[in-house]
Image 1: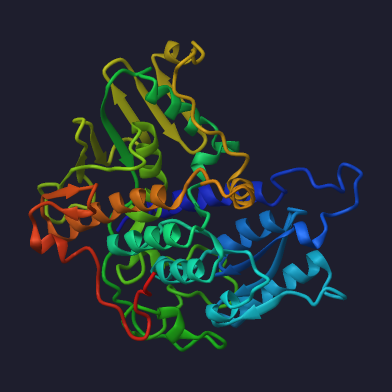
Image 2 (image 1 turned 180 degrees about the vertical axis):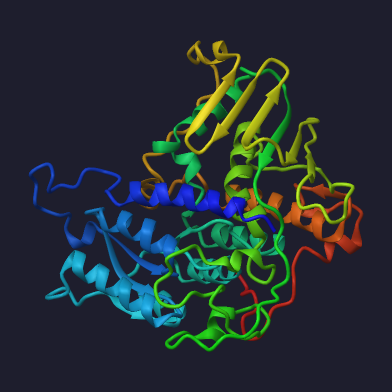
Length: 433
């Protein structure tokens, strides 16, 4: 499988981590006000999953907020737990505050009555169980993308969030402006018809995942390997899946079907999220999925929407929206519009104006206080990852698929509906909501 999308992810998240190392708002101390909000006004957070994304992006961002307090961290790897605890204690000062607590079992963290919300940054195959249990425990949730390992998991996550009235933010940061401000801007132009009717969209990302075939390596000391595997089948340890010590590169568990959907879902969760937003389809999705003619191909799958718009896996790079009157190309660091004139005229009265986030984490925090839905609410995140799942199913099974986005099932296709979920290893079954 091509490594290109994972290099793209490194470049993107490396930039995001560097930006996140500074607070996303100005701390009180910078303004000359040394007083932090009283404890009763601080949002308390527990973090579950402490790898590179948590360490390089989520942790520095949360620790930069005066009105947020990280109380506990959880990971199946002892090295990561201790590293995270030390970092939190260094920020707040452990003396007199009790310090940050560390847990191996997420259930112990969720049982804490003094924790308001949790941030989940584990491998994909753990997201659904953790998110559902967090909702049941009364916690609001920020969860990394891709949100789920299967379509059924995503539907159950929506049910849990709605039933328990939780605020849920999906980690799809491209919606939240900042260095990615050209994404919401482009979506507004597309929604308002600046390029005419959208005929096709090209999505240049990696391919589907494959079954894991790694050999056995000596076990990493301090790692609860059985718990890392969770719902996935038992297999020997390999450092590609859970790197030794603190990870210095993005772990490649995302290449394997037991744990993720490959580059197709890893970066696709971001890119298809923008496609959905630009097309005004946050509460729906494609109705047909067509695999490439070559059964060995890892690009070329097509998604057809009811409007006739085709979304194609492949292309020259980034996202390319082709309309009857123009074209917009979006990449992480730039945007190109053809013709350029389509960007010159400001939005007029009555045109669509999309919500502008104050920052992805800040939006989550403010919505927890207001009880409003954040910019990338649970259903938005699930709809986006569902497109990734549909594409992977088309590649893996080389089948044309008719999708009913309203009812979350394949239309008139009993065999395909058996692919909505997969077997899980005991005791890590999907919880009741």
